[in-house]
Image (tube, rainbow, N blue to C red; front, side, top):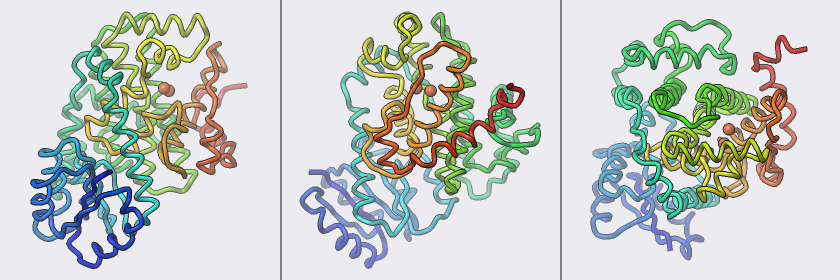
Length: 405
Ligand SMILES: [Fe+2]
Ligand SMILES: [Fe+2]
């Protein structure tokens, strides 16, 4: 039985939760705390699998509580259930929470989110994944500029210029971020020349994602890669999938938060390839060769050779880095979204579709195999009717299309 601890300072919210979640009492063992302090006392007595905390509480707030929980009980899954969409507090808890949900939430949504969180943890705890991870060697650390940026964003006094200057202090990083911003996939119509300008134009959420992906590629750039593996091509593909996924979210008319999840998931969806290519160079070289010779998808060969694919290993790394669950999930299941529980549109939907669109673009001029949609999943997500509209919107971003006859 899963054990869940709820924390909220308002007694009627806790009572409401208790009443609402009563039908789940056979599946979950639940405890309720009315302050951060009380929650820590309960945790000192007894282990829990999940903590669901309010953000704004007197004394110890949600961000502080979850940071302590992360330190003391790293295996616990941490959710924020917050009534206010206070962007600043959300920024403050980056890395401390796996998932944000807004109040009021119905038991079905909460249950599905909890189930999905456990499905992800199953990947993290799978012996095949950890065995491959240990063979890959040391996993890359969170890019330094990203870590500095997250820290700066926690400071309520920080300005757009401060954030821009942190990026600019890293010249290689700035070049990569500007390359992303100015790429056609991003849909920014005017030339952006400085990081400060980019922050002002795109907002903190987006910039944070760009800095992360730029840092990841930058740290891999000095490494020896197997023959047939092109960093350049992966970078281009990642930008395309990120841009497409963001466009799909825009087409859906969704808010900034989920738009940014779609973008980040798209930019990072194939990050596992970097890990496998640099960490298991020879074997990955063999996988690439076999995929070309047999005209099969690389991830299918990976599955045969390693027992897992770049999707799981990429998700594993992002999980360690503390990225929010919806992003990690979009990476973990991007080839097989049907394996993810839950229904409705999420970052996973956008990344899965964007990756297939990007693969179609590639297949136009190469004899690579063509990826296809998971039709059952798309039906479950209720988005099949939107596909052609999404495809048109994504095609408009593609620079190749413009001069194409
Ligand atoms: Fe992939
Ligand atoms: Fe991909």
